[in-house]
Length: 367
Image (cartoon, rainbow, N blue to C red; front, side, top):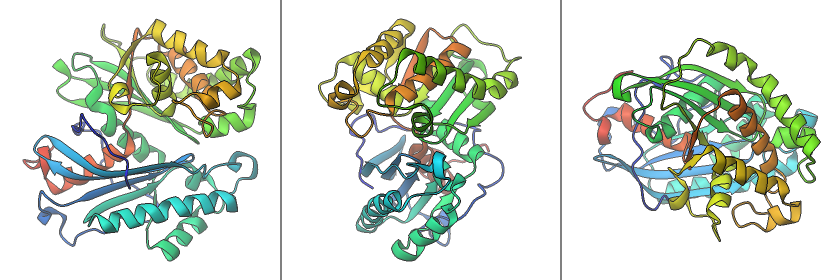
């Protein structure tokens, strides 16, 4: 669990975004205390997010205005590689993931983590051997993965990035483009957006890995890109119908989190190497996004692999992500897109600290 957030350590909880009932799924928190309310403000917390493509960890301690990350870890494991074709997690993917989870476990132990939540998402939800894999992790590593449902994933993502929303905006579409699923959420707010509520959400059973496996990700022609975008547009229809009566304010904007949008930001900024401090919170206007996407589409696979903000591990996935983004932007036209290099892990940490009433949540909260 070691992926540091140098600079801008402030990640505040988004009010009223958590479901009223606890997450359903397999597993539980690890390294928890008997009485969470007794946890001292200096206690160390951890959040682990095992997705279809990545294994990510944050370890943090609460502060007066949020939390300070003291260690982190992020590795592309492609747990869901081939899943859309076989319906199962492959042995090679499991081996890669077990190696990453072992590092995470050791980091949590070394940092003296007292409260943690370790979640798994779409790959484990949909794989025929997902529960079998979770049991293997528990037996071999002593880590209990909780397979969260899609609603919980959507709400945690909203909690993790909501602090970046324009405070003057009363309507926002937030999205998280994952490896095997993509969440899209309509956030509504009252005057000056002092509180935000999830007014509608949808979890599409597609992401950059599954889309690239279906359409191809190495050589993506214009026709293939159009077909991918149309496929995602069809998947978006239930959400579009849900929010048909919602009103867009004059400050309506998109708020995105994922490797796709951070890559677009890196390309836009011409970064010689990826820099989270330059990307997280960046505003892009419509033309900025168009130009960056066009640049990515014009690159060969080799050029994408050589780009410092993409790399070989993601070179075959980034255009699938661009197709998902394109479909969202077409259905919800906006002049601005804000980029978030944060998400589920930050949402988990905020929730744990909120439950313990430490940090900015110590005086209570509204659920």
